[in-house]
Length: 428
Image (tube, rainbow, N blue to C red; front, side):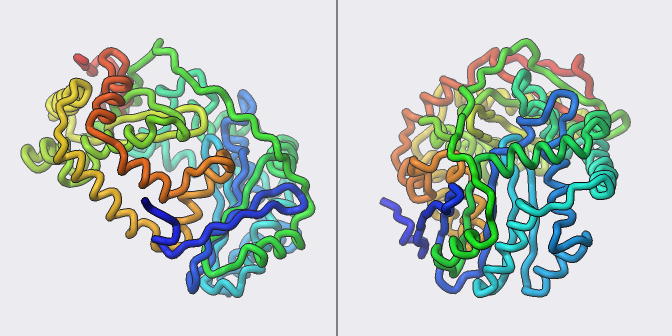
């Protein structure tokens, strides 16, 4: 049985007087990484104003009362060997900071709390960040490899709020007003559901003391997780053509399960079996034996109410039919239970051993933990628990989930490059 102590980590939890939960993963002698995470992602974007959550993130991280110029916050924390960032996904908005020396905890906390409580949301900041995001959108929509994940979400989550791009479109971005951003900040950050997660050579009492001194907002203790999303397969192929390009980028996959579902771990391993490394089935067939692709990967992406499982790769256009044929053949083999115990054991051994490389930084503990700490505070979904569940997965479990999720006639396909929907011929 795995324990947190196996990784030199101690987990502690507390709740501030304002209702915000605080979680620390204490590791003596390690730098500090801290994040405030909010249930305030792009799934809350108003219709016609898609991208509002991401826009709000940009604006609140631009200037604050203490840091009224755009460069002053970065200059401040970089003077302590640290940095700061923020991000938005379909479910969450995160604000994070880090410092090399944990004694500078007050610095990291202040750069987070300033953006939560004291952002300068005015027309100058809004219009400046609007231009920045227009450029950001352009960087994605002009690159077929970068645009593919957006196209995949648009297809597989059709009918769900997360089907639209986190960035929004040029048109929807222009519809977002300063008042919209102020409302988003008030309703979903200052009155929303939140957690602070920190890791490093710190004590939870010190983290709580700094937060109590700098946060006056009363956060919501209520959390309403949506019901599991079940897509309607009224459209299952989606392409965006980039004429004149020599490659095709594609995802072929299926609806998956939410992050807390009992099938999650077995589905993760199923993805690793088929395309989880150089020794995986598809890497061997597509690259090592035929030289058709540079790389191929499998994913099992899970969120609070939805998930997707699939294979992603790219190839030159004239090899597309051959590549997709091999991918389908191996998915069909999985569906029909053609997997042996030796391969499963290899994948499990790699996962357990490799995880020690993945958790050597303070950032890794925060990034692995903040989502589950926000949405599943009463369940043990820690790394040790995950590894314990993984160790129990049997060959029959893999066959069961493959039969359940990788069903013929239930696939979805998204592609970018010089390809049209009429070019897609998938016999599965």
